[in-house]
Length: 422
Image (cartoon, rainbow, N blue to C red; front, side, top):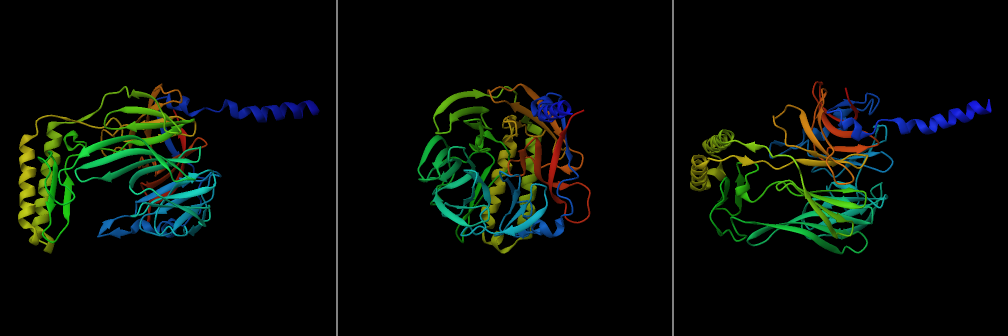
């Protein structure tokens, strides 16, 4: 009997070692995201996600939500423009709504030091830190706007920040110490502004960029063409960690910069796949639609339009001028998002070739800085929203805030996906 007990114990201990790791799944070529029906059972989604129906100025705001996973597998969902957060157990069961003391409606961004929640910034650059129940701990001040903030495992943050200078936009990566609030800028990039802070035109207008100075004060700016290099703008840098390295990925150039967690530069490489483009015909279609939309907006003739009618007409004339000059393709960024999986690989998601196709091509960056394989993510049941604040890996699963394709009532769900291969 003792022998059988010993053999059984060894078998139980060793069994997980034979489970398929994620990189081997990616190498099969196609990964299907299949919802785990045992997860998040019996939740009343119409009540829990009632903020899905929120609007702001008559525009839907309900998908402006984000997801944070805690060390024990519990999850927190943020609701934009609401001052509460929703907590779920590791099994996906709704637990409670709670607030962060002194945080207002700031979103929780993540966990630092395995015991502290931290929020995004308010208009004064203030970050609020609390325990897991929302009890206030401290405030940090960054004095700028941010695109992303992640916690490092050494008690520091990596931040993608940006500021508006008098004649330039500045985007940068900074390392911020949680204890001292001291920071170190490790990377920066500048883009020229078309209009200065006092409303004066600084230079010739870049194609597909338009600004209106309102008679009653303030400005309206828009860009009609996505990914146009002429604008000098694009997707912001994206950051994640691999072991004790900070990875900075630049979508517009395809560069991958590697730093240690103190912000010291280590290496530089580039992606090894070709970018897609927006063809001349596609650009003309996009630009013509923007022109038609603005003409329809003017025809409605609300009070603000009437007060600035000539400015709007001039803007449409500039759009028509740009339409006539379209003659070359525009390169798209090398990728749209990066998401780290639970094995320490970084998934680089290409920009989808076809809108709403629910098919996503992924390049896999491993822990030694190589791209050993590529795969495709598909899903039958949900319309996937691929972003770091809507999808989080843990223990081989993907946890997501996603919309169910076929359902009555509220379609938004907290879902756990299994990664299946053929």
